[in-house]
Length: 96
Image 1 (cartoon, one colour):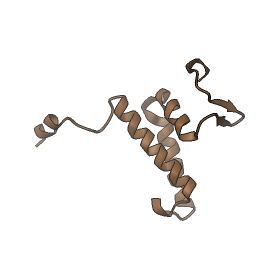
Image 2: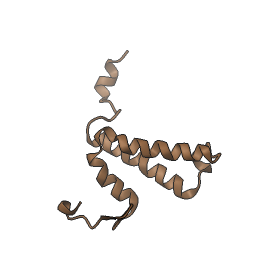
Image 3: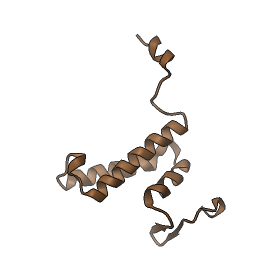
């Protein structure tokens, strides 16, 4: 991130210099097909299920915040790279 002049850096196992969702959003641009972001979201879901939290609203606040951030970032990157599930209205009309 130094070449991009971002104030973020890795210290040990932790990234510092910005809030974690912002770091994930910027780092996600190099994540082919959002594989790492999807794995991180999946890990959050598995952890919640392991702790008996089968619903988003029942998750611990920090995990809920991170899962929401991950899902938002995945959707944003899918839209930006053209792999979005959105269809043009004209194309949707052709499907019968």
